[in-house]
Length: 127
View 1: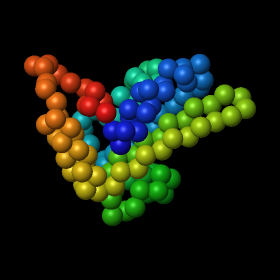
View 2: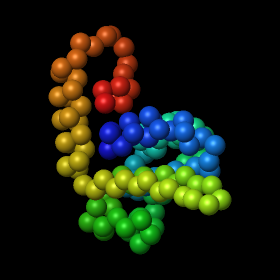
View 3: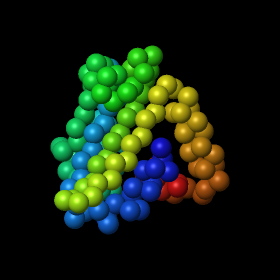
View 4: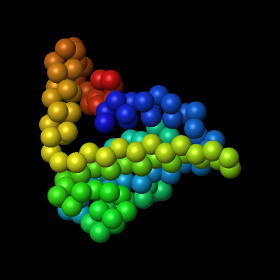
């Protein structure tokens, strides 16, 4: 997921003249901000208040295709970029806890190889 976010960050400037939307979905109990969606929005020049957030389990399962067994722990992001004659859809779907653990492990592996300054880092600085 972090590599996907880094790719969007790198290419985002090139899509700013097109119509762009972001839809995100997480488990209905999520109360923290949608950090990944906010990062993607910043990369694409989309206003944060334009992010569409879905927390309804019925929509998540029936429309977004989140398996019922993973409605309690998932992350779904859909970016659409279009003009009058073409469209691109980029989608990510993370289900269950394992991808989070693997991602954290990868971040820690990278961080352990760097000499860090005493400051707050954006995780995308490591990719």
